[in-house]
Image (tube, rainbow, N blue to C red; front, side, top):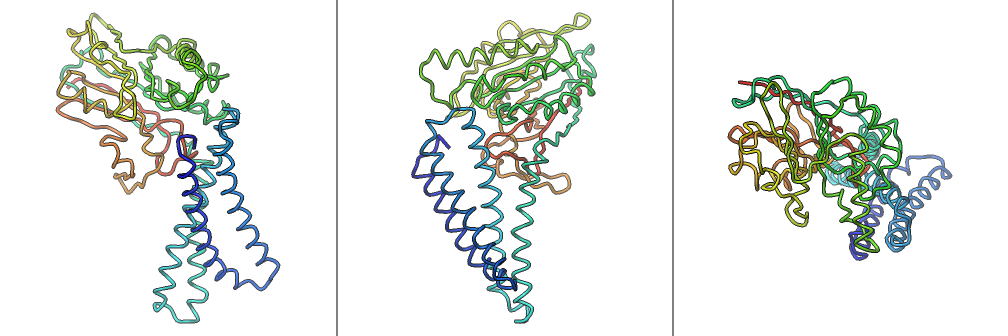
Length: 405
């Protein structure tokens, strides 16, 4: 909320109020079916208590945001975000559906319309409400493992069958120190027994203090010495206000140190060579590189120095837009691993097809992509940012097996 002006916040509150007024108008058609006036009045009072309370909380939080402790601020913002979504979307659908039914009630007899329209309208509001609740309290921690096999002509034979595991976008501040939740993901990782583990950025929301206690969780990953990571846009502290540049840099340094503490090699515009039986592949990692307003800390050319003779290269780059801009048709990088988009944490899945509004912002937003034998994989993320839930876009652990053609 801090990035939005008070005018924008007031417009949001006005939209919430307008929807609530219309919703209440239709709600009265439903409550009139109740015989108890006490129950009817109680429902009306609770409706407006929640509505006015939510709007007041949003405005108060915006006005007092600078004075709130950062740890409490993150929790308050995510809680209000969840409340707003779980309230606003169901009411919008309720208003739309009951309005359509009312103005098209010639389908029903007058007697039927008195009962059917309110009941269908009520169902249309409650169904999405429970779906959003499921997204917040259940689906957000319902980890899914995606398996892929990719064949390459130039993969060294010694690496045939190499199993790599990718995780991304943890945003640990959102877990609010609930270590046991993420331990389930760690168990999945250990059971999969990968040869290499890659983390593609956004370890935190903003602050190094979000990492407190998490080292004990990540040290339970059994794989030794073959874990690599890069930074994401949230790992630089660019979305917070700091008293000085030194304070911001200290925060950033602590985040980088955390990787060392948990046994991950953090690649900062550099590469590392892995050798098996005298055959080699290169693991390349760049700092975050994105289109404005995202900053471009990444320097791919620097990272590629001294590995021209390595036949097979894997790139870790947080933002998938980097693949289009600097990788394909310009390098011989075989596989790029990214995250960043979260798949918008919301999608509609129909058989083997998935649709999400995020596709209108990012050309490559979830899953595997290919361009002339160069591949990109966009991980859907393990954590969340903004909306504290996932709807049709489960948190992801990716396993990719590399094979020779």
